[in-house]
Image 1 (spheres, helix red, strand yellow):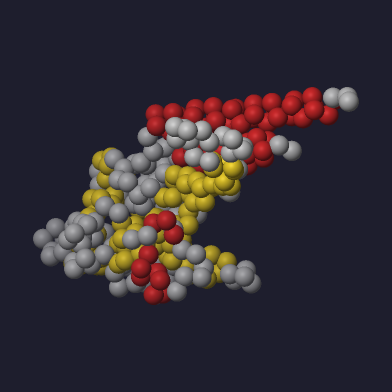
Image 2 (spheres, rainbow, N blue to C red):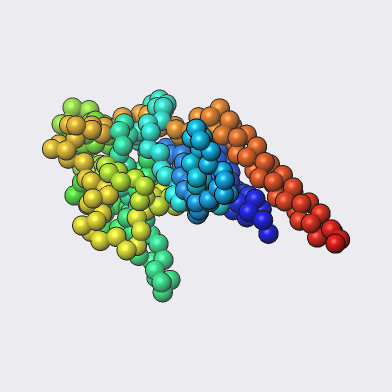
Length: 291
């Protein structure tokens, strides 16, 4: 097998992975809060070849050695947290984040023994709803959850409870005030504050299904603080993160850019495929030669 066949076959595998990323971005162009992923490549191997003897001539500036590549491989699918456009919904339970923040939610997953356990996840999808409390001792409150039933967490790491027959108003810093609809003149009560985290190192976030993100299982609590930083008044001045009530963030996928990228990937894939065909024909000719 000659060098061109090796290089082309390795590059085709990397291009196929990049094609899958582009297709996934296009498929989620209308997904609320979706963040596009970008491929990052590096050389598989680079060797230095020597020019033949007598190549160097007086006045020639070409170096005696030249690099020969052996294809590229996908090293990371980086998460792009660029802000998506905001769409007004006029629903008091819809929320959008401005800035590089994430909502923290609590989900139920299965452990190694198939037992249900609580797990922390993060999302940009602020399409929330009120769900009845599963606690029979708490019939007067509703819980703030996602459309899939995952619990939205507060800054005190507890569930956010909204009294029945109360409408909510959310400030830019995530503080939730509840107003009694049966008593219009009653003073509002503060029921909690939505917990927001800043993605300091978003490249370490793992993208799950249902527009959720998680961290690798070997991350320690100290390392988690370096990756996801809880938003407070002290650290929210330089890179402000705010909540917009009554809005939903659209995906940051630009369909025209993705289609252009898709065409470029297909052309590169065809070029490498043609190189493999040409290499195969050359080897066939070499094998058919007779002395």
